[in-house]
Amino acid sequence: MGVSFLSALPSFLAAVPPSSTAISAAKCPGYAGIVRCCKYEDNCCRDEGRFRRRDILNGVAGIGVIASVGTFVDNASAADLIQRRQRSEFLSRIRGTLSNAVKGNLDLISPILTLALNDAMTYDKATKSGGPNGSIRFSSEISRPENKGLAAALNLLEDAKKEIDSYSKGGPIAFADLIQYAAQAATKATFLAAAIRKCGGNEEKGTLLYTAFGSNGQWGQFDKQFGRADAQEPDPEGRIPQWDKASVQEMKDKFSSVGLGPRQLAVMSAFLGPDQLATENLLATDPDVAPWVQKYQRSRETISQTDYEVDLITTLTKLSCLGQQINYEAYTYAVPKVDLSKLKL
Image (tube, rainbow, N blue to C red; front, side, top):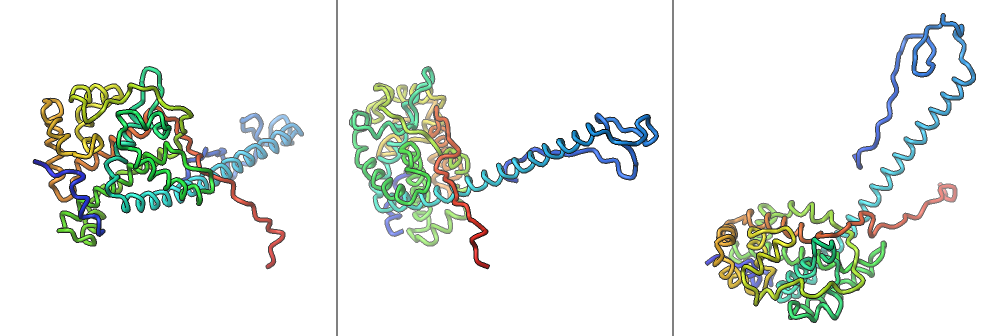
């Protein structure tokens, strides 16, 4: 019997710029000559060493184009840096808000995970519709049988959204982003709780263990997917099985429909209901899934549980952007200009 991803939770209760286009010109130092139509000529040529007005005008125009392109690239790079910083700072505050929300409601970790999974798994490859678009927030969708027991998690995130929107300078956060980053916060909380458990419940030592051997550095790609668009209506019914009643084959078929296999099904066992070990016992009855269940159970017994954490983060990252067009300028805002002439020196 392996260690549950969620079983450690009680111990937690105490607890440059993008490359710009380079523009260069050929130089011929020490040679007195005339540049005309990219051809080098001596002073003794038939034009007797004189520049024609056309040559001068073309040269001036060329310099102007190069200067303007350089300025445009510099301005674009600066603007991109500003936007990246704005998004990074906003995301950092979002993580803090959601981390606090999860810590105060550890009993809702499992529903938060399933909420994120079910919002994403409505994706349909044939029609390119559904996916992690926040549609699960609609009352007609959250009340479906497959989403039973998830309303409390959604209510918690709605409260967190109010706080996040209150300090956002670039508009309200989309439910599509909110739900997936809540799943990230819940996942991190369970990783940390496992480290604390392995340190005999010592929160300080557990935190140090997780910092030293944990998987925080694996979240980079997940964090880039920031800027999902909210759906304006519920996703179609019948796309999500009731995980607690589904057969292993039905689960495999659903995961396969979104491009995932037995390996990903096994690593996402904690997202399929509150009793991870019971889910894994069921999954282990299938010969395709069983080897992966055993692999991740063994990994959770190790100090770093690297295989489990890395594969879970990788799978969640893929699920969290199924069918989504990420707006990489989302949540950015104009920076007020400073009139230097009005500054008193």
